[in-house]
Length: 422
Image (cartoon, rainbow, N blue to C red; front, side, top):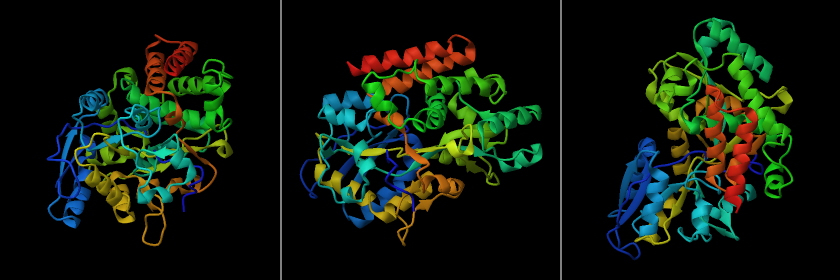
């Protein structure tokens, strides 16, 4: 089973929402729950919502889905206006988009401390959804960051799965010579660049120094002065020099980079587990891929970051708070967690009938990491605000166009951290 003492459920991912109004307030006599969700998650949520409605005759879930890009500001506006949904998708912690604990600090989401599922959360997980001793969000799954790869392309090029960073860059050079893009990267998407940076940071920053975040908060270090963060940017440049990315990487948007991997134009993609669904949706039925941990300088140094992609919260002004809590309790049950993970392409710790972890097939090669001390939390979720990770990634985009130097990128991240900490 996954070693849960080191893993924080909680993500990577910004989410989208619809704006709804419930029928009335009160207990189960109010038969509608309003829900805000991400368009790309609709296929995951709808079967679960139908199951909830079947188990609760007469209750309906009014779910609306909107694209990611406009979500954080839209939800904030509706929360402030008292018009947001009963149940809302967020990210855990404070460092992601529409962060659950940031909303909790502002009094915008309800206290869920007395929920039945709290006892099943390990201490590290509770930390990312807890503020001042109270739990405010339910983390849905476990989603590691990893390298997806096409075994067929590897075989044709005579490339083996790399176990060190040097082997990875060498593989990039070999694959590029065959005419395929070694690693598909959406350089025009700061979110996608951020995924790559955080994956590099797992090996170079937080692996060697698990306390880096607290040291930065205490002003004992900075991004610019940190050997680990300097190595992150240096390794990104080494990957560029090894032709790991396409020549047009700076202009590639997320849908294009997913399609390139899914259709065999690229051999690899660095992704969070939530992206598995998007890859499969873009790929032919015959497409098969597997996974490996993004390699550090040595195999022994390699770490895997894992976190929940979504944390559900209940609006503090929910028109139907009792049913909203009942829905989250239902989703927290092992059967529903397993169903979510299988559909989403993520992992449901302990949700198997025998108490085992439920994995999607593409992630099984990561088990040796996720069941040991080589797993770690997705550390940016502990950063003071989403603006820090965004500024780091946005500035790093300038490396692809020559508009930014490595030192400028790290100084920009420091400025964002200091601004968010005031």
